[in-house]
Length: 196
Image (cartoon, rainbow, N blue to C red; front, side):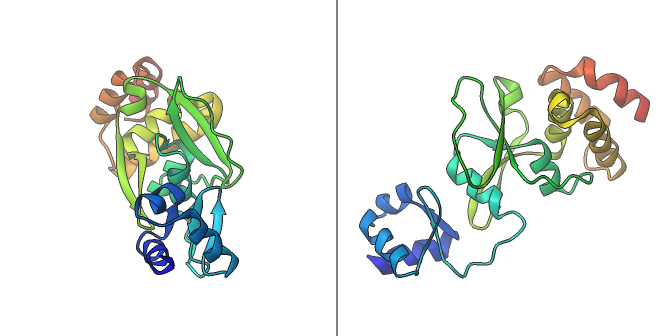
């Protein structure tokens, strides 16, 4: 059993208690592995190898494990896609409007809510440290910055818009279509016309 738990941790970088039990590992095995320092408890219900190399995106993978229904967005998605100059100390995550906000101490997280197309449009799955992480694509990230401009600042949204257009990461038409589907076309249109 301990070998199976360690194999899972090596394969995925970190394992959730739920995933371990689904693979036949008893919770007591994880507790003993933590006591013997073969595993480290990185967050409630999350275990990892003690010598694993942390990357700049480790918190994103951990956040995705803790909030499986959420999607990494806004400043965290900007940093992941290397858009603009933002370096957030929190993981920004979008969750459904009617869900409760999880109480998570580590990593530090900030939640925004959405529903309908604003929640599902432009969300892709990326692999980070062996974990599948739901994240907004570059076009949707820019649109979200305009949608939540009171949270991140209009200057961040404008910088992101200029950066994706200059680097040709998306087209003005793609931005306009995504803005229309997410209900912020009237907000984005004047800035898009001024920049292009």
